[in-house]
Image 1 (cartoon, rainbow, N blue to C red):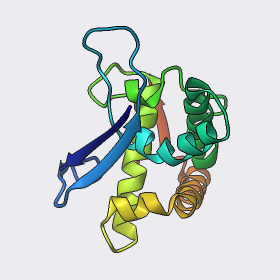
Image 2 (cartoon, rainbow, N blue to C red):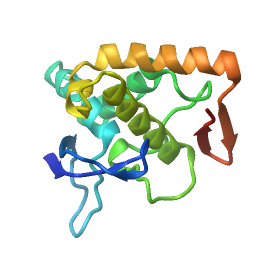
Image 3 (cartoon, rainbow, N blue to C red):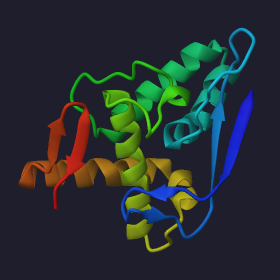
Length: 163
């Protein structure tokens, strides 16, 4: 099932509601019957095209989701060494428990918002469309600041950026 959410969002960088709407996408295969909670977020959005390509190449859906999300982790390079998502992106949420998966979602979302701000367009959609550029920018920014000032401080499973 393809999901799409459109609307305003909480801007983790400015601490305010966004000034423009965004469209995020996700894929989900319902399990069983009854109500199921599925979250559409930056992780699901950044992996949708890769999941489609993997499934088109014959990879089973859940394996395609796992592979696409692991590739995103490696590509962005913003986590501690050895981090692997323990849940699919559709289970990650900002208002959830204090764990590495939800912290990863927060980090990716904040980085994409900052990329949109730095690009001068302010458009997260545009930043997402240029994912390879985004991953290089995020990796370079995190790498240079990590080595220069050690800005990432881990408290429990929460990462905060010190300026």
